[in-house]
Length: 319
Image 1 (cartoon, rainbow, N blue to C red):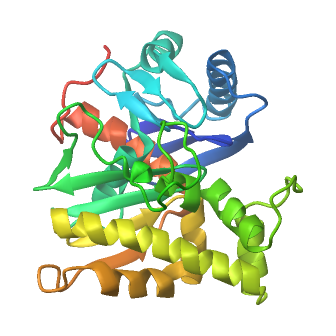
Image 2 (image 1 turned 135 degrees about the vertical axis):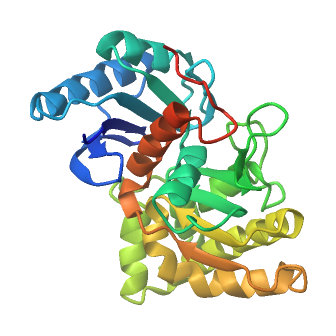
């Protein structure tokens, strides 16, 4: 009998709802832009959209729900603890969804979830030690070591986005200045582009990382320089982390990963400069194969991992 999973991927500017089976085959995925981003609205919109999607597939009832959230999560209690970028925190999203739909719910940070997706469905099926990095409206990361997700002493390992790459750089809501997230996530790409262009004033909101990538593909010099800096910022952090953790592979996901070819050369040059190559002789860096659907596969992987007690955060179901 085929088992189905409801996957909910919550992002900073959008969210996605999907129904897929335990082998990773998508039945349907729906994409939505937030009307407003607040605790109440997150719950209202995602539950409404979930009911709409499930209503179209009454013969494929899910047996579990996986949810990914941007920011700090408590998977054991199903709580979205904090997101520096949106300000949302202390939201018991797991118990709310479980009460609403009556099936087990599992949640985790989006980067941790996507690392699980790479292990279960993607490029890291045969890898025991790898680093996953997601670059979208924010930047997150996850460490997979000795075939287990590493959560750290307080449950929040992998906050790659808050490594400092520019001394006294752009202020971050985490309280520091110059975080990778502020310089290399989607909004950071826009800041870099405008700074290089000599424009620090208001700008057309249609100018986003995707639009700048299109400019770069057309040969726009400022856009090309922007993505050179993107590769430098990411490469510097990834090289440092790799020198500490010694991964077999680094996978980069999130929306910005779709522009990987634009910063790959700069990334590799930076890695070549800062990586301890004798200790990391065969390190491979690649973009995720999942593209925009990485969070969906991540949410499904969270649900499967929780239900089947695959990793070190077993027994996380709220039911």
